[in-house]
View 1 (cartoon, helix red, strand yellow):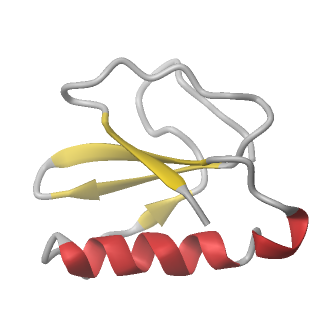
View 2 (cartoon, helix red, strand yellow):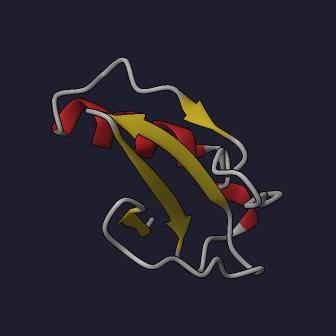
Length: 77
């Protein structure tokens, strides 16, 4: 499984409508997580991968959000 990680405080992000996007705040920064060519049977593993990343950056309490929380930016999965 491959997931792109974008720090929305620093990176420009254009979501791909064919992929899954999830969001989360860590250390006062907003991150977007976007799958890369995910198969339907792997979709449930996305949250686990993001939780692993949160542990990796030493912010295990990161809340995973289904939509972009920025005003005027809403992405449905």
